[in-house]
Image 1 (cartoon, protein in one colour):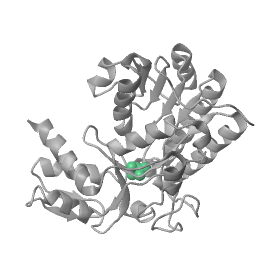
Image 2 (cartoon, helix red, strand yellow):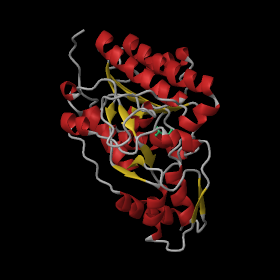
Image 3 (cartoon, helix red, strand yellow):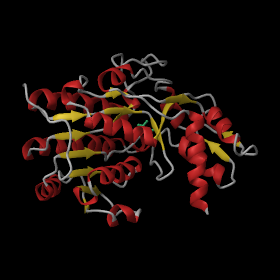
Image 4 (cartoon, protein in one colour):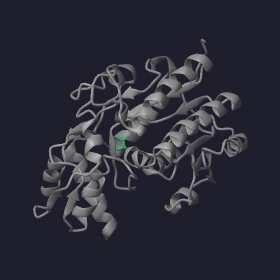
Amino acid sequence: MQTTLSSSATPGDTILVIGAGGQLGLELTHELRQLYGASSVIAADVRAPQNPELQEAGPFELLDVLDKSRLEEVMRQYKPKQVYHLAALLSATAEKNPKFGWQLNMDGLFHVLDAAVDLGVQQVYWPSSIAVFGPDTPRHNTPQLTVMNPNTVYGISKLAGEQWCEWYFKKHGLDVRSLRYPGLIGYKSLPGGGTTDYAVDIYHKAVAGESYNCFLAEETYLPMMYMPDALKATLDLMHAPADTIQVRSSYNLSAMSFSPREVAASIQRHYPDFQVSYQPDSRQQIADSWPASIDDSRARQDWGWQPQYSLDTMTDDMLFHLKEALV
Ligand code: AKB
């Protein structure tokens, strides 16, 4: 089906962020409110926000994305032009609760895609992950199109979700856009239940003057990204003209790749006495099935993706802001 797609929201349009209280949601909501005006961006989450800014700075709705009639009620009330659907169970948590992980990640996506088609939403953003790849995937410089075979519930749900996004685009002309995020690192909020969470926790321990016991082995390389780059990538993708978005499943996205040993060394430039021990747990198996580095040349070609932060520049910024929060 061929449709004319509009490329992004303009000031005055309404934007709904589902999962606004999460690691990415919190920062994306803030960024969108800066861009489009606080009252135009509706933050929604299954829980009342722990961060008061979310509710104080603009509209907030309690919303369980598994409750389809409540989702439609919120969408009828605010008539969003764009929906960012971020609510999901991450890799480690979904392995512990596989049925619920599948239900939330898949039914939640269907509810959003169906409501978007039925209620005339113009653009949907939905995050995918490096978890779509599995142990049979080439580990280094993993291409956009390759063997996938994910072996986690989270990865299976993200791969299926990507295919459904593409199907809704082709079948219904819905302008769905998606990125395969690497591990995301930021100082404003904590991740919840992922395999890459160590790369956030380690900075908090360093600034608190404590040692860190890492749940991944010291030479485990994973693709990672600093939050300002993740926000930039998300907004660049959503602002790009529709005809430049050639990948309608999800784009590979990359900024840096490092191991726990390397991030510890980067922190030790500021805290020479910082100690890290290694005690791999069940998350090691998940990490070992994921790529070590990603080829994101399609994102660079199609909509000009360019990351700004390296490991050391991220470390400098993370430590500066975490220290600032202590005083
Ligand atoms: C996780 O570790 O589950 C997430 C991801 C890479 O999608 N951070």
